[in-house]
Length: 481
Image (cartoon, rainbow, N blue to C red; front, side, top):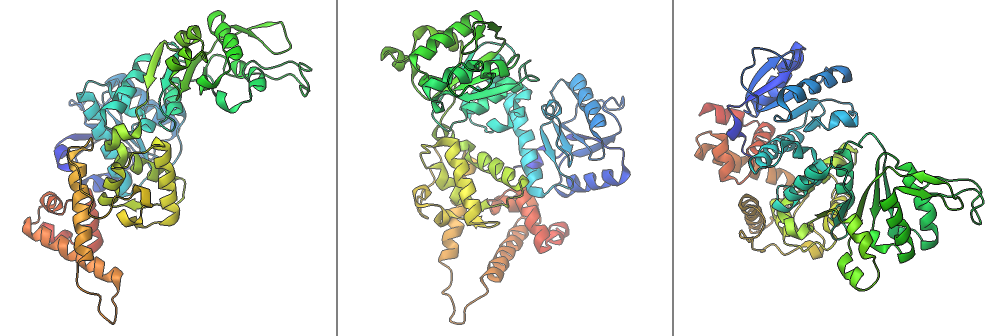
């Protein structure tokens, strides 16, 4: 991430505690990011220019945080992203107004991800999307297909229309459904999912509509169905294409008339639910084959959203991996890092299992290489294209990602072709640390101490180089020039 591009932007920090102000300023001064403006309130009349983003300090309680966020919403109407320092989880209604939440003090890695999200916020705005789309953090990505999905969600969320989510297994259809509910006016009511393909046909009616006591063998008490549980909210019918024809007729009646009866009862119950359905099947083909009712299809397919496969958005893989790893870190499960070469190899895989397969791989790598670095040769064989894999810069991956990946592969080859291992052996860890330190010193020297230029020569992000300079105590080299 190029931090220099926003070096002169104003960052508004809402923090009353003097010590906290000093620490926050030190963090942003260290990474040379933005110009800090401190204030006690969003409504400070002396702030004339709209800030690049807003930081809410960690000493605010939830009530103060709510007040600040409401003021941000009122004054800037989601035109400005918000970074919150907090060790506590927010209520869902507050979380929707925050771009990112970090513990204080943040690690450089997590702060870098948060700043990347802010950059994405403005990139998406410049492409015509509403800035609130950055709130879809579970639909992370910079590719055009996923940006289109976020745009469609934003357009239909408040309409109340039935939505049909289409896409292969593992693409995140339930994530879309949850975002639709979360950004609708039903968000304070229940979101009730049901996998129609996982329930036997003879039990599906009871699951959906409930039953009365004694309605069938084993019905020892009355039970609410999913339609009742979702009253006022959203019912997510996953794998709708697997519902038997007899059940499709009953479902169509509920959608049309908005009433239903429990199994074993003749008392009508009003239905006030929004239906979001999803399937990996081609329903038009199923209609042609006589396995799905055409009238039900048109009732469900009011607003279709098609989820792209992961193979269609490989440029999102680096961000998805970062997000998955950060989630595992937040769950205290450790961490893992991937080299650019390993990421490039993953971008060439066809991903039949989509994002779910990527998530499973990240978890597997975390177990196999806890708190370690994963290179190409460490990946399972089917994800590995070989050390001499060529990076195709004309692929959907971004040019920067391809160049980074190629640099990672080249450095790997250099290490492998180094001097022959001496008979007495070496301290490999110390040797690699010395080599890295030496190359960083050389790059800084050739760049006359300009960190951004040195980072470019080393094909790494500036924030990564700053972190390594601090590790090796090399700041003085940059300052001396």
